[in-house]
Each structure stands twice: as C-alpha cells, then as structure tokens.
Length: 371
Image (cartoon, rainbow, N blue to C red):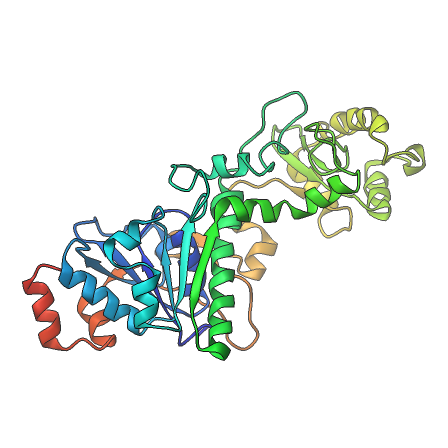
C-alpha cells in the first residue's frame, strides 16, 4: 500500500535525518533496504524510526561487498547516504559509479554543511546548522539566550524531510528524462529555507532582530504560553481580531479595551492581565472552556498525554505497536493509504534474492565474509 509502492530505496545506515527520510518514504509505500555495517548491533524494535525496512549487513571494506552493493544499486530508484563528503567516493560507491550502473538513480546525499564550502568537512549538529541560518537567534525570550527547538529544524524539517522531497522530485523528473541526478540536501540550506517567511517579514519591516519582541516569538500576549493554577501550561494563539475577541469574551474581558493590541507598546500590560487570569484555573479547566471554539487556545500536552487526546485518537495521529507508541504516517491519502511498516528486520538472503542474486552468488558472498 501507499503511493510510493513499487519504488526501491537503498539506505546506507546512519543516524538522524537520513533514517527519518527513509522512514517517511517507507511509510508512503517505498521498499527501503537498509545497508548496515557488518558487525553493527541489530536495531532495537523500539526504534520505530527504522520501521518498514529490511536490513542487510555488509562489510564495505570487502571488494565483494562493494560489488554486491553496486548490484543492489542496479535495481534501485533512489539511494540515501549521510556520510561526510568524499566517504562514498573512497568506498567506490560515489555518484559516478552508481549512476554509471543505474542512469535513472536519484542519489541522495544528507549532510549538515553540504558537499562543498569552507565547512563541508567539519563536524556539526542541528544546533550548529540552525545557528548559521538565523533560526536559532530568533528563538527565545527577550534578554535571554537562544533556545534550541529540540533538533527539529535542522535535522528533520530542514534535513530529512527536505531530502525526501528532493528524492521524490528527482525520481519524478527521471521518469521523463530517463536520467538520474545527485540530490545534495544540506541541513544548513534546509534550515535557511524554513526561515523564508521570517526573512520575508524582516524584509517588510515586520520582524525585529531583537529576540522576544515579535508577534510570533512569544512577545505578543496573544501568541504565547501561560502557566495555570496546577503548574501546567496553556497555549494561546488568537492572532486574528475575531479570534481575539472570542478569547476575551470567554475570559470576561472587553476586547474594546485593547484597540491597539497590535502595538508592541501595548503588549506588556495585556500580558500581565493574561498571566494573572490563566493562573486562576487549572490547565484542563481552561482546555474544557476553549475546546472546539475559534479562540485558538489549546492545552500544552506532554508526550504521554498527546496520544490520549480525543482529537489525536479520532484522527489516528498516533498508534501503538507492540506496546510502543509512535506517530502514525502522514499525510493521508484517499486511495493509497500510507501504512507504518513493522520493525526493521534482518533479511540478507531475501533481499539479495529479490535483487537478482542467485543462491550461488549469496553463498560466495558468505564465503568471502562480505555479508
């Protein structure tokens, strides 16, 4: 099932955005074969980011394993690798030999800094990539240090998700041209791309470089979180005037008291009122008051609570498999629904046979200790 059924993707084992990209593609129906390093421990079943994969362990220092990998490339539509620039070339598995074997291949490269540039060979993590794009500087409270937004912006939104989009675009183009290409997905580029609306606001004079002074960074009283009587938090986001008026009505405030609510000069006083009001009742009391309204107010749920919320349950936003709660595939498709695959499993002989290796070929690889 899934709209990508019939596509085959080779994933060179890595961490972070590469496996996330492969999970997204597998959820959408692609056959993903994960190439593990020989001797690597088997993936734990709880690591659902690896769901939907068959795995094979290869000794990439062995010429026989390199040749076997190139044979796997022959039948692949896409490839995902997340090594530093030059590593795949040194293994003999760079774009040139792979595209020579399979001219339609979408060759996906996932790095932090990209394939070239002064930092291309440097180590880094999500926090470093978003630091160089302006994203990290923009996140945090006024007068305080920037706050890392988990590793969602660089690794996953600007990394794995963007690589998935790039691979799909390359595979779609190859259907018409018959020619594959390299997809150079750098987390620094992707994080910058995610910042496009904020840079656009800055260009229009609607975004200040001063952290915690803008409409969407927690400065505006109607776009922030508030502590409730039980110490838990409520998320408040009625940006539009009609939604703001509804919030005021529910809180017993007269919206006419705030004619200049869009002016930063008016924000501290209103925020002070809201702080005092929201501290007066528990989070769940407020959630019940605003549930289903257009006031754009929601309880801040933790990761135990979120899967139990009625809306998430009705949508099937989360699922449980073998006792492990995990996000369900997204987006939704009306005719070819996406389905989460089972935990990753080792299936070397099965994979090789499906890719055209004979029993003698497989025996030879085992004899050479290549797999």
